[in-house]
Structure formats: structure tokens, C-alpha cells
Image 1 (cartoon, chains in turn orange, purple):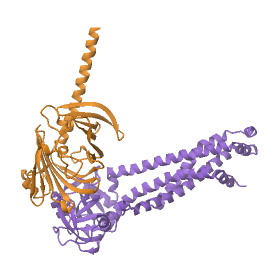
Image 2: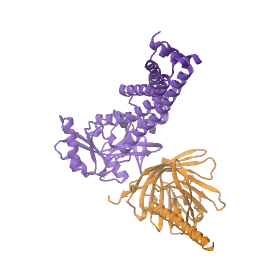
Image 3: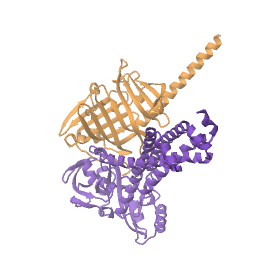
Image 4: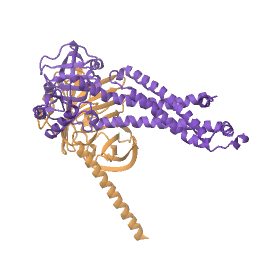
Length: 259
Length: 371
């Protein structure tokens, strides 16, 4: 009897270890897809709340395994053109950044301000700079059908020394294409804070399936943000200056490294 | 009383049920007409766009995206040196969101190239030179973006001025934002990159010779594929997917129609059991009864087809007037499509009547006595 119990326990431990490995592998894969070098994205952001506002944005990003630098720049409408947000995160350290409002107002952002809204949307600064797939605790907690696609539910939790405004994040991953179709972010009390749904998936210039259109529901009542990507270009060359407040004042097109 | 009077009376016996079945099959056929008409219209519009530009061959790499993949502009020079090529014009065509419009065609054309020649100015002027920060808008694009001459237009990181509104002679042209290739490459950081080459073949070349020229171009420019103008869109996996979706959705609607007609005809056979048995008793052959049922279902299909074609056409015309998609649809409702829709409807009707007809043929005159 004892031997049988021992065998069952060993088997359960082995299965659990395998499941953890699979979760870690999946998270590592998704994390690497996100931290994929220098790229520039063009997207339209529509915030529908009490009033509707539309922004055309250019996003410049340099993402490596060790660090993330992102610049969100408003291209349109004219009255907001030139507004920019710079966000930086290195390793497990808290994110920081700066905002720029033309003609020359620069406001630095520290880690305590990362919960603030990004350009009036339902996303926070943390949402765009944080890669929760790189958190230490990853587990597959189930499967569910999302938009007729079978998805694994990956739960990510920050490990010790990792700072986040969220206690856990659940991602519904289409394993066939390795694309997140839904992301839910929870507070320490277990309350759903933010839900991000993928509404369109495209194949990018690296031949990877990526979410192109997203709908974000945050804690603001009656507010929803839609992000519609229109282009993405990888292998772009940026100067370091483009990721500084001084660089915000010079709006330049992103050039491919080969150009 | 003739055979056809009996057929028509069979349908008129339950006018509400016949009417509802007719509506069911009509909606299926309307879906076929609308979806396939829109999809074919899109293809035809691109072909018209090519024709008005005087393009014989389009060189591009459509892949599975809606916009072609970029390649080096050096390919244009390689192709332009072929003796059979009268002229070549480099283009960078992109599908992108512009200001608050979701997706628009941005067509950047080689300055001085022949692809500018078909644009007829409605108002304003053309840009003065290749690097003037200016765009011209097709008339539909101007309406969608709510722009007039002199208005600013934000394209990527640059604010340009609308200098002209043009009639391009085709829906795709009229829905485009058109500017100089060099300016666009500078704005987007795509110097030395293009994704389409329009080619005019030497005048007098036959269709076969143009196809041979395509093969010749493919041999010297493996980065892209040369297609006879108008056929190139069919090469796009994305378009083929849209087309397949149109037919797939239509087919589903037709299957629902088939089930509706089959149900109606089965009910007819059950309700008219006595009548059919009497007809058999007075000398009708089972084959004639089968023909009667099949004629009824075919007539139902035919009428459903006619009504469906009308509903589909009117439906799309109404859609065209909606502000959100005004100017974006140019459906191709040609006689062939209408004919195919009606024939499809009749075939659906006949197929739906096969089982009820077979059931009716198994009735015997003696059953009439049982009431």
C-alpha cells in the first residue's frame, strides 16, 4: 500500500513538474516574442468614454531580454501632435519615464506614477512597459475556448523582487499560433482590474502571428479603448537620442537598419 | 385544368407558408448576390483602376497580406531595360489608417511616371515637384477624410497639404491618398523600397506576348511576380480568402434555403396525400406525380431566385448609401451573376424537392380511401 502511495505521489509530482515546465516554456516563448529588438508600430487609438477621442500614434520600441524602452508619440490630431511618453524598464527594477507636451514641458515619471493612464486611454504606463511573461511564477491553470479557438490559460505572478501594480495576470493563449487572445489583470484582492481582448490577428514582417487590434476595458466606468494597428516594422535603427526627452522634439521616421 | 395549373395551385394552397419559404430562399440567394457581387466588384474595380492607368502588367508580391510586400526599387530598372517594356512606373501602395479613417489606400507614385496621367483634376492642382509636401485625394477619399483644398493631412510623421482633388476613373483610385513616391519614402523611412511596378508593354503586343513578357520579368525579378493587369489581385491569398468566405457564407445561407423548401414540399406531400392518391387513381403515373412535386419546388426556387436577386441588389445599394461605407463599395452585379443566382436557386429548389417527390411516388391509389 505504501509503495502504491509513493508511486502515485511521485507520478503526480512528475506531472506537476512537467506542467510547470510547459508553462515556463510557453511564457518564455511569449516573452521572447515581445522582447524582439527594435521596431516601430503605427496604430490608431480610440477612447470611447463620455467623449470619443481618436489618436494616431507612432510607437518606437527597443526591447531586449534585459531592458525595455518605449516611446509613444502622438501624430494626430494636430492639437495633440508631438505629445510623447517615454517609458523605461531594466530587468526586475521598477519602470520609470517621462512625458513631453509641446512646446517644451517635460515631466518625469517615477515608479509610483506607473498606474497613471497612458495618453488618456484605459491602459496604464505599466501595461505597455511591463512584460509579465518574464515573471518568475508561471502556470497553466486550464483551457478555454475564446472566439472558437481553444486556448491555454497561463497565469503569471511576479516573483520576489519583481514589482508590478498587478498581483496576477491571466493570458488566454492560442497555442496553434502562440498569440494571446485575451489578457486579464488582477489586483492583490483578486479583483479583475483590466481586460484586453484581441479582436484581429495578423502575420507581421517577421512572419509571426501578432495581435493587430485590441479592445481594453479598465476600471473606468463606461470607458473602452480600441487599438487598431496599421503597420509594424522590425529591424529598425534608432539613435539613443530618440529615447530621451530631448529626442521627443525631433519627430523622425523610423528607418530600417538596411536602408 | 392543365398540368401547370395544378403545379401553381399546389403552391397557392398555403400562401403564407409558400410566402415564408420564398422569403427563406430569397435571403439565401440575396446573400449570394450581395457577397459575391461585392467581392467581384472589388476585383473588377482594381482591374478598372489598372485599365485607366494604362497598365498592362503589374509586378508585385501580394503574399497573404492586403498590401504587397516591399522590394528594392532597383528591380524597376532591371525590368525597364527589357525591350518589350514601353514604360515602367514604381509605386508604394499601402493600406493604413489616416487621421480618423480606419483603412485607406495610400498610393505613392514615381514622380513623372505614367500612373499620374489618368488623374483628372476636379479642383486644385497637382504637386509642383517630387518633394513638395503635398497630396492629392481621390474624390471619395476627400469625402471620407472631410478634406478640401488647402487642408492639412497628417501622414505618418509629416503634415502634408491637400493641393488637389482628383477623379481617378475607378473606385480604388478615387478612394486613395496619392502622393509622390520620393516624398512617401522619405516620410516613412522606406528609401529605395517599392512594392508595385506598373508596366506598359510595347504597343501592339498580343495577349500571349504580354504573358510571355510576364514570364521574362519573373525570370529577371524573382523578388516579385508579374501578372497581367486585372489578374494580379486573384494572386493575393488575402483576396482569395475573402472570396472563399463570400462563397462559404452564401453557401450556408443557401443550405438554410434548401432545408426550408424541403420542409415545405414535404408538408405539401403529407397534406395532399389524398389528392395525390386520387391523381394516381385516375391514371397519373408515379413519374408524373414526381414531376409535379419537382416543378412546384423548382417554381418556388425560381421565384425565390428572382426575389433574392432583387433583395440582394437593393440591399447593397442601401449599404452603399451608409456614411460608414459610402464610396467603398463598387459591386459588380452583372447579368452572369444574376443568371447564376437564379439557376442556383432553381437547382436548390429541384434538389430540395427530390426527397418529397420520392415520398409522393410511394403513395398508392388505395390510400385515398383511408382519408
